Image (tube, rainbow, N blue to C red; front, top):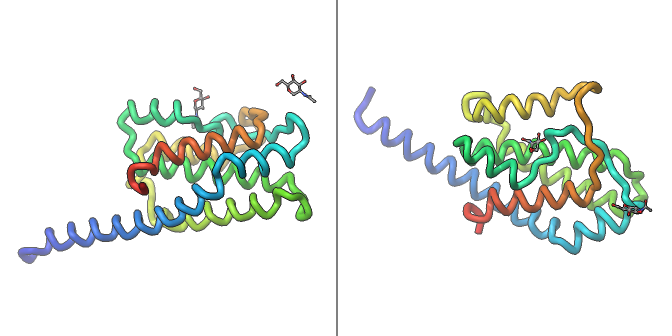
Length: 176
Ligand SMILES: *[C@@H]1O[C@H](CO)[C@@H](O)[C@H](O)[C@H]1NC(C)=O
Ligand SMILES: *[C@@H]1O[C@H](CO)[C@@H](O)[C@H](O)[C@H]1NC(C)=O
C-alpha cells in the first residue's frame, strides 16, 4: 500500500461522514419545525376523535428511557439514530394509513412520512456491519412484524411526542 493512502482514506471517510451529517441536520431542522408542540397537538390530537388510538408493536414505542438504557449498553449514536428513524417511519405509516385524503391531518402526516423517507435515503448504505447488532435485530423484528407480534394501542400524539423527544435527545448536539 502506498504511503499516505491510509491517512487519505481516513480523511475522505471523515469528510463523507460530515457531509452526511450536514444533510441529515437540514432534514432534522425541517422535522423540528413540523414537530413543534402546537402542531403535534393540532394534527395528532385535536383532529382525531377523543382517545383515538392506533395499534403499534411494542418495539415501536420508543421513549427517551429506551435510548438511555441502550446508551448504557454502549450502543453507538449512529445505531440509535438508525433505530429512531426506522421506528418512526413505521409509526407514521400506521397513522397515515387510518386517514382519508380529505382528513385535516392527512397532508401533515404525509409530509412527515416523506421527510423520514428522505432521511432513510441517507442511511441506505448502512448495513449490518455499521449498525449495532442489538439495534439490527430490533429493527428487523419491527420490519418483518407478523400479525402475531404483540401490539399496543397508542394515541397518535403520544407516539409523536416520543418521536420529538427522542429526536432532541439524538440530534440536539450534532445539529444545534
Ligand atoms: C378518555 O380517556 C380518559 C382516561 O384516559 C377517560 O377519563 C375519558 O372518559 C375518555 N373519554 C372518552 C370519550 O372515552
Ligand atoms: C422500550 O422500553 C419498553 C419498556 O421497557 C419496552 O417494552 C420496549 O420494547 C422498548 N422499546 C425498544 C425499541 O427498545
